[in-house]
Each structure stands twice: as structure tokens, then as C-alpha cells.
Image 1: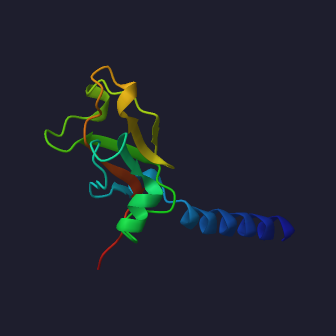
Image 2: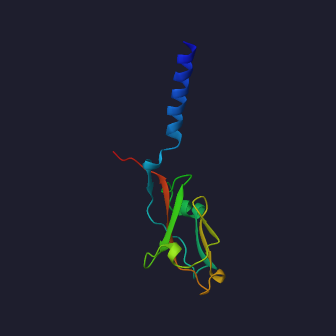
Image 3: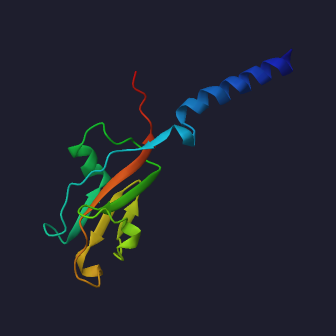
Length: 120
């Protein structure tokens, strides 16, 4: 009886904890977001906290991944040759102009891998 109760408690714990972190197939990409232009600052700053402030409730609390692409031609960030000071799902993207061989960062937009929202 005690062994059966232990298994039931463990199964209940596993089931309950599975709701806290969705499995990978329940994640989706957000829309693309852009709040900065590399001409307006010393680079392109697409910081997660600033994006959340401008787009409330659009980006989850703990994104799993980040993608970036150029605004104009949609070239993925890894194909541009730009060096990134920050490129992280927990912080966002920072590209500093003077770190680039061209002297200027591309203008990027970013999106995040977050739990999917289920709409009825």
C-alpha cells in the first residue's frame, strides 16, 4: 500500500511539474520585433526588457531561443558578418557599431522561442 501511494505521489508530482515547463513541441516563435536603429545609438540595441516594455505581454518571461534578421532584406544575423556584444534569449541583441569592420551594424529585428498561446 505504501509503495502504491509513493508511486501515485511521484506520478502526481511529475504530472504537475510538466505544466510548469512545456515540452519543446509546445513552443512557438513570437512575431518579429524592432525598437532601435543603429544610426540612433552607437549600435543596434534590441534588449529584451525594452522590447517587453514596448510590446507588453507579447514576449514570455523566459524565452528559450532568439533569432535575428535584418529589417530590410531578412538576412539571418549569422550570415551578416556582424559581431554581437549580446545575443541571448535572456537579454536580447546588442550590436556595437565600432566593433564592425564596416563601422556600422545592420538594423535587426528579433523574435523569441516561447510557450505557444492556445486560442479557442
